[in-house]
Length: 298
Image (cartoon, rainbow, N blue to C red):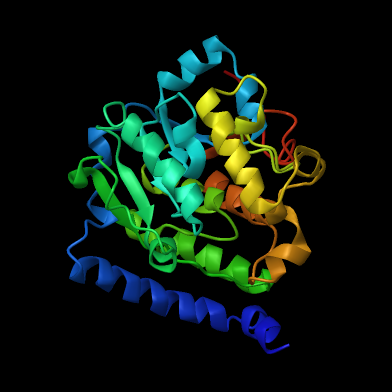
């Protein structure tokens, strides 16, 4: 009851402001390069940003569609290094389990030439909680950017609406105001706006199941090996993954860590983006987010 009250009454929001400031000071104290130092203009070639989720629908994209994606900008995150497409930017939430982490580091090191010019954005709160470190990662250190997002978790819809209205009206247009709520996709969307993109397209963000591109029969051998370890660690079978919606859409699950479901949050954020003349679209009609998010036309 105390935890529910803490999350519902907004005390967690207050704490998140304090924690974010503390994390930013730690980034500076430890001599790490903050995300606010990223010069987006060095990488930005388009007004369209594709966010590359790991949902299995990403495998349905055609060669022509991948050509269109490569002619714009993109962000890959978390397990994306097991996919052959190299994004413009890459974001990591450091895995808690060493088996996950070791496979990710090994894959990035094998592709270090391909990723040598890719900004590597690390979520600092997750990194500090994880027992794993990036010391063995062989990417250029000057490309590391440390991200301490504001994490205003609350189950109170009224408070969340007020906070998001404040964010829209009061935030500065810089990377210090990334918002992270309920799941990785939330801060990637806000990051896309803060980077100055006018259209943000979600690909492989299915949410109606828990199956990933590395489960697909046509996935690479590397991806299939990752899938095996991934499923073993989660105690998950192929049948259980495909039959269940993503856990971040389950209100009972998200309430345990103080959030509303991620899809509810995305719809709220969509309204903010629309007011700012930013388009938020979904890349496939099978996603749980369709039709509330308009379907992207390649």
